[in-house]
Image 1 (cartoon, helix red, strand yellow):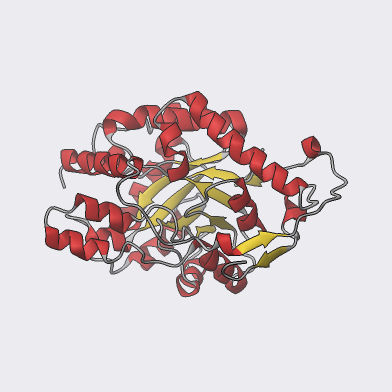
Image 2: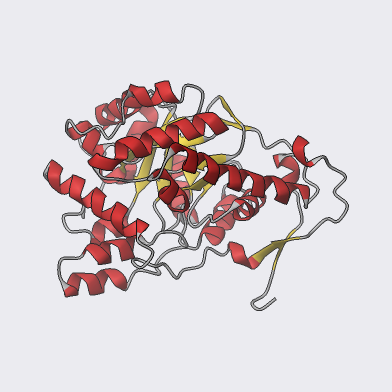
Length: 347
């Protein structure tokens, strides 16, 4: 595919996700079915609650990952700069969007070592699509992605549904697992594997653990529906009809998180996919996530200004802190033992 086509695709994605009238998802994350038991006597100092954690040897002030966002070449420079500076200011982790165009052309989208200069202390994660990592060049390709931004780890994203529905998408997924296994063995940096909004099943999670992956992002259904996004981009009514049939496809985020955590009790997990606020983040942490990722909910602020991004994530962090306060959780370890009950419909 030509560079201009890839750039246009990314611009289309950004426009559609930012337009509230388009690509509306109806799948629920499942987090709404869980409710914390309120503690009326927390016996805590709210301002002393410790939200600190770490990722790949770097300290974090809160367990939040600014998840990978996409954008066209004309806009992504500012987006990446705002996100990196906000992550540095607040002590959060950041995963960049796909580096495919940056590796294959002169349009680097701001994905250079300047990003590391803007955010010298945070966990910074490179990102490539799994379908681009087969063949002889895969390990070199992965190393270049990590070196390009001096990343602490590489995210490999799995998006088979999106590729199947996308004009010009990668349709041959044979050999992907073997490619991931080769990269984990040879890269020299941790590998994180994530879905992009349809969820990881237990069976796939086990395969990835056996392949040597360091961390998984379950990225379940309930956030952006990439099937619906591709439906909005479809070039014919027939292609749109195929795509829109899958707009509710996927494993809801809470379900994927609970099932993978139960199956793989020691695997580090990121929960993403429809995390709307700090209460959702707290629920995900209590259900077994080590970190919580958010992308689409922060995208509008990322296209506005650095201050808007910082304000957005400060709100999420304060919501998380108040949730800890009202569940008598002095830190994240205590939060993971808070009383969180599954509720019935209508409760």
